[in-house]
Each structure stands twice: as C-alpha cells, then as structure tokens.
Length: 319
Image 1 (cartoon, one colour):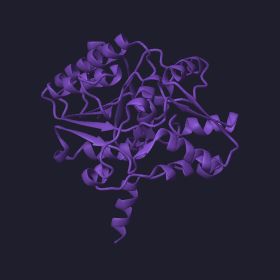
Image 2 (cartoon, one colour; image 1 turned 120 degrees about the horizontal axis):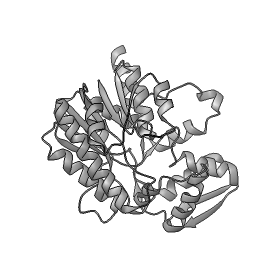
Image 3 (cartoon, one colour; image 1 turned 180 degrees about the vertical axis):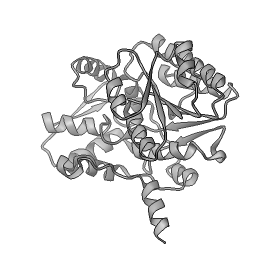
C-alpha cells in the first residue's frame, strides 16, 4: 500500500493515475470538506479523510502503508503563519505516523531552493518540512523540483487560456528570473523510480527540465505558437497576487498558485542534465509540452502523453 498526501493536486492527480496503471494499491489523505474527495474515490483509491495536522487521523491513515509520497503543500494560502504551521505540524504528524507504521520509505517533493535559511516563507516552510524528514531516521528521498507544466497546469495552461479569452499576455513581475520548467509526467516518473531504487535513498535531489528559460521567454513562445494578436502586460508580483486571489475566489484564476508566484521572482534552476544523469532519461522540452496542450481536445482526449522514461523503456525493450 502506498499512501499519498496532496493526491488531488496538480502533481498528485498525474501520479495517482500512474500508480493505478502499474497496479499499485493506493490510499490518499483527503482534507475534510475538500470537493476533490469524490474525484479521488472515483479513481478507485482508498481515501482517509483527515487534516494532515491531526496526529490520530494521520496515524490511522499510515497504518498498513509500505511507502509514503508526501505532496501536500498550501500553494494558495496567503498567510505566512498558516503556511509555516502546515509544513511544520503537518509533516511532523506524518513522520510520527510513518514511524508508528514502520513505513519502508518516505518520498517528498518541494520546490527548488527550499531551505530553512530561505528569505521566502514558502521555501523556508518547505525546508523545515525536509529537515523534519531528514532528522526522523526514516529512509527518505526528497525531490526538489522546478515549476511543473502539463495538462491542467497554470504555468503554461493558464497563459493559453488567458490568451484565448482576452488576447492578453500577462507577465508577473519582471519576467526575467530564470526557470527550468519540467513536465509533470517526468516528475511522476522520477517518483516511481525513487519508490524502489535504493541508490536514491537518503538524498535530496534537484530536478528540472532540459532548458533554462525566463518566464517572459516562456510566455513569448506560447504567444508565438498561438499566433494571436496580443498585448503584453507586466504586472508586479503584488498586483498579480491580488488579482489571482480575486479570480481564485471566482474559480477563474489563470495564474499559478499564490505561493508559486513567489518562485517566479526567486527563480528555480538546477543543472539541465540533472534528470538524465540521475534517473536515466531526457525530460520533455517546454516547446513539446506547449504543442501538446494547444492541440485540439479531440486529438488528445483520453490520451495520456507518455514520459521520456516510459518511451525510452519501450524502445529498449524492442531491441
């Protein structure tokens, strides 16, 4: 049994489908009152409904689990104190539950740049969560990932939706910070490998896509591929954050989560060959992902784009 937190989030949804496709029994931790609990149940997975900071609820959720994948993160929360409590208290409860259940391995995903000395509250909280796991004595793998793109994302998908609806290309902040977008399916492939590869144990591993790009370069590429008459608008991160909060309440926010907007200013990059060197496959370039997301719905409906890791393994099997 694999226990997954944050299973209804962007990475979680992609990962759950992959775990189910390879026949892994899955239990997910769902927040009480979350509208996505029914979606999780519809996927045929077990759901433990409990706040992540409830020690008894989390202990029960961990019972019988062999592995834990910790993805939960408060990316839309605007209050620093709540973000800090979530990371520290929630991760501490999860570690206690994992130790009681004698879990074999705990995997977690944080943004690149996470650390207790970071000047950004979100990265600082993620760093505290990582530190809690490292000090627990549990076998662990901590992936620090650059911003992800893929079906249902707000990094590229949000740009596409806003351009189609308004013709506006909105760039939060200066747009000059360096990013290294990685396809969500490639992150899922890294996690699946880390579930069983002992060589990756007790390591913090930075991963990103094969290109270093600024947000503005990504936005310009999307606009060029859509061939739309557009107006480019630069908004300060603070202004973008306020707009995002209003639109979030209306269910129409095209921008990344409030805390992810911080990362657009900070920049999140690592070595371009990190995934290939450590996991043995070349991650998808951004332009390929943009082309896939822009394809007509009838051309991609029901089709899951395979990761380079999956495509590579099939090719090797035919030789």
